[in-house]
Length: 221
Image (cartoon, rainbow, N blue to C red; front, side, top):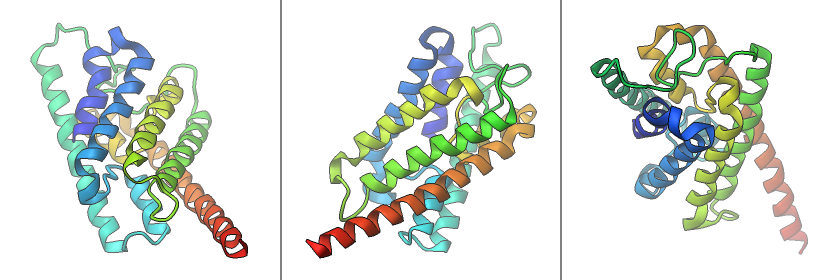
């Protein structure tokens, strides 16, 4: 809820003034705060792609994965609902996050981009982001209390890179919430599911290979 309300809200309420760099930083800062708020309770996934990679990596059970995804979708829907309410309250306000008939910073292909570019960007940026999450939170090779800093910075970075293509998803729940309140975004929604899930699979496989290599070197040493 807070990721959509505050991060997407930065685009909706302040986008025209803070621009792509400011919006990207807001995404990173919100996640950084949430990691240190609820990380010790749930791991602070707030992202089905991250939860999917955690399940593929054997760090959570399938039932837990399903519960996380349902919670993430409900939270995203609630956060987007608050944004929808705000926009409806003051139609004369200069809102951002608008592309054609879509508002609320929905994940839709931006002018000049196409579905192929958006799909590749989503897969590769999610690959990077989830790989950082897996590495930073690894129980043996991670960085403990400093993991949240790397994770927050990674989300901010991928948003700065990807916003101009499709408003940057790397998170199916983040895409689901605004689309629920802005149906014009549904035609592009599949990209925001397929791309991040492919990226999550690549990240899980890559981290498994890297971890296996590190473990083999440790044994040799």
